[in-house]
Length: 349
Image (cartoon, rainbow, N blue to C red):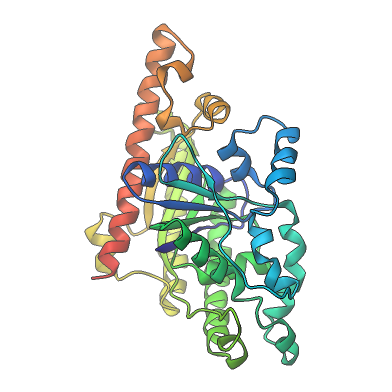
């Protein structure tokens, strides 16, 4: 069971959409996948459940509120006289093998307490179970459904919860979009990720955390690469205005992020990237903007690449164009899923 964080502290880079589409495709390819909604905005939860309004989401929490990421963590955060146990997942009926650990708006309330616990201060004894609680819950819930992969959808930001989730993950994918802000985010992550790795190394060796009821694990994080989404295609490739920023993202990764990650051993061996056709910019996939297909996807709680002709709700040339786009996206996400699996398998050799 491999935990893969999809993280970028820049918003609007399709983290949630990538988790949903990649998780669905991995399940389509025969894997059992647990998607974790750790963003208090709960967009992944709403997307999976196909909610059309606030009332439906409110009803879900009234009936299923004990089965969320936050509720699963409460035995540690409220020092309850019971252990953390696997949370009952939401089964995605239309895609066997795909499950959701639902998000919770109130997860943000745990941020400050976790941040204090992760400062590794002398007073940490009273908070020693918190840093390892996220890993314990995800492992328990993943094992309860025999998951092959846990995909973690994360909020934009650099708070304690994101630091924890990145640090306990086995791998990380960096979603980006072709704009200057993604380039700036990569430069920022070149400074942040090594610092988080140093913190995780220290935390895993600290006796008070090693001996906790929920021990903080030894970090194993490796960066798989970037996914660049939401470009506008023209004649089968990215339009020039978007290609410019795609190139800049590749350059930022190659010249600034990769060297910083290498110092803290946060990369796979170079041979693994090369054998899987990954360029120097560590680009795993280029995925065009979904355009009008996204509304159909949201309406039917189905990835764009799995929409039926009936769900596409069109005719004539419009339907033909929709089908061509749908099939193209199926190829893109199938290739991405296979590439992720291959990178992980090759890294074990």
